[in-house]
Length: 368
Ligand code: NAD
Image 1 (cartoon, rainbow, N blue to C red):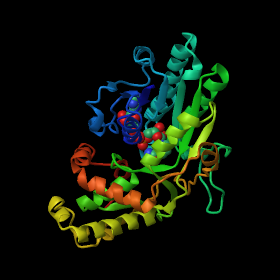
Image 2 (cartoon, helix red, strand yellow):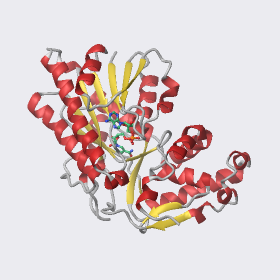
Image 3 (cartoon, protein in one colour):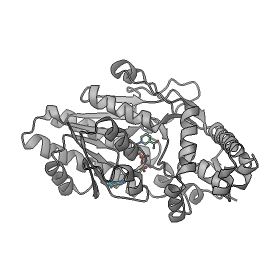
Image 4 (tube, rainbow, N blue to C red):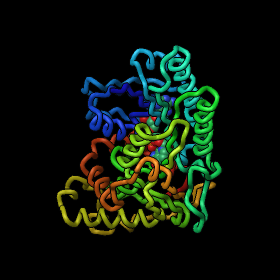
């Protein structure tokens, strides 16, 4: 039995991880610590809110005394650290929050874990600090470059990826210097339920449903390696159960797609959904073009993001060979599940769109 502190558990991946873990380990206790920034949403945790093994704490990871109190009072043996500012466009508009949460906040958690777990004489063998990071720390790849492995040198290009790189180094340093039991996973782009509708896939789906232009940066040929969010949760589970302390593991889907191809694929899948079920047109009366099978007419090319990385791809051999990690969801079934989830859960995403009418994409580029 374990007591987990999940930071950022009201965000996209954190919430999916909480649902996955509570189903797989119903005897474990989970405390979610989340500051409920624009990206945090308690509604994403509604399915577990009444579970007696679940506790929600509204707070900031930078508040070290509060984190120490949580670790002590809940007997936390495992920290799974998702909390972050996570949107590259927002990091270009305003990097300060990224430095604060991603670097200072991670350091605050490390400090608290070190103090409570090591200095108070707890057995460090029973404790684990798992840090959730990104493949963006490795920078960008050319079309023929080999995919990122765990030994690829760090070369972050955006304030977001630079702040995540700094946090990865702090986690590593706390292991080497203080002996804290840490692991890190660097994952490729996730998609799935509860994804905030400013990121590419939910933005495309929700813009189609609102009949709004779908912004595509530059030539749309930026390549990303996509992983269904539950496969990410499964990967973190394997790192927690089987990963070697002090190690980093890359988690990816071997699933590279150019942005424009994903956008076209979602348009096609949504055209098909509306063609096969006329009730969606009644439920989404604004969805005029997709209702006529022409969602792709919403595609609008906009000025490229500054410093936009061209290609990310993960070499997952280490997690595959050491942990037996394999994603199980295919891209087409994962995308169909995701589209279906957004169609069935408009009550989750439409308040977010009302509260954030201008996404960071629309703030950084002019959409007609
Ligand atoms: P998200 O933006 O959806 O959620 C972040 C959560 O952290 C929100 O609930 C927010 O309220 C909370 N938070 C932010 N600042 C906080 C603070 N100071 N204190 C406490 N809580 C705070 O992010 P996500 O997409 O779920 O990403 C989770 C983690 O996974 C991040 O560390 C991110 O770098 C990493 N990651 C994301 C992806 C991806 O595709 N989304 C890929 C690889 C790695």
